[in-house]
Length: 505
Image (cartoon, rainbow, N blue to C red):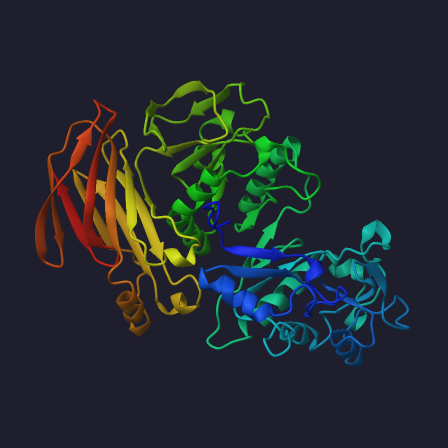
């Protein structure tokens, strides 16, 4: 990936990393020194994600199975004559009964560094097959009449089984070190409440256009239901994608560039429950023709995405720009004044993405090998003018790792452009205290390195910056014509942690 200049955050290992499909072990012939491997990855900010499924290989020499059996933690047969046994990837397997007192805590402890030999704090988890999937079971799952603790039949809690396993993993990763760090866990099975424990994905798909088209309404539906950290297997699970379906380097870089906006949306979702990716009708409920739209969608309130959904790139895409508002191509900054319908012919290099007029969108333009290496990279603010000459947005930053944000260790700014004045103010959620003070000290040199003001009606000549009771003047570069004018302020050098004003004239 480094050779091809593609940033990434994690390497994923499927079940073959284990010793004979026994989870919490390593195949020593393939991974003779997993700790050194993880340290090498972490040098560039990369993490390792290993699959750990809920089935436990039935093997009396396997520590995890032996402990689970000795404590009576496995689900029982319907007549409670013994442990329920089924067939999955390791062969004959058992499943933990999370209603049994102590079973969930015991499962979580398997993720602790002293239990999961060869693991480090840079290793995270992928929970698969946790519906649970059982190859020789009815409907490829557990029989409805097998028994859980307290006499409950599996039919009574099948829908929450995957979430209970997800929660056990979450608790284990949160308690494996002190101070605790936020875990990353991807789960295939989920239920109402799973959003508290980690991410989910839409399951095993096929690498074709039909499944790509299906993935968008699936992810949108999950977001509306409160499952915000949701996605699809981009490359497909079954089969190999056509060249047109391959993820392109520039698309990955664009994702990393936009991470400040995405992260801010996650913050807003955690406070309000608003979806991160949104069906068009959420933002434009008065436009009835958008109620049936299942491919075009919004990322937060400010970005509209029009994906190519067909292998034939020569077919034009129909785009309807909603509301009486300006829309801007985020790559070219060309203006489209709504209401308007246009056709676009796209290529593999560019996805149609439009910024909504009246938005301020934060980005980080400097490329790094991973998101964690971007922690102190300066910001760029794109200010897309609305028809009334105003714009607004937000920026949220924390350390991305700890739970210190709960004690106030974050920066949250409300950004606005009104009457040719750009301002940054602390949000009402900002809390003074030692945690915030310590975080501000770490971030004191992180600045805004560029402002891009798009859609100005008249040119601007200079800007006066006010910060920390000091003022200074800075020049602007402007080009374009009426309603397409763009002005750039290079290195205003205002700090993201401070209140500041920039007055344009």
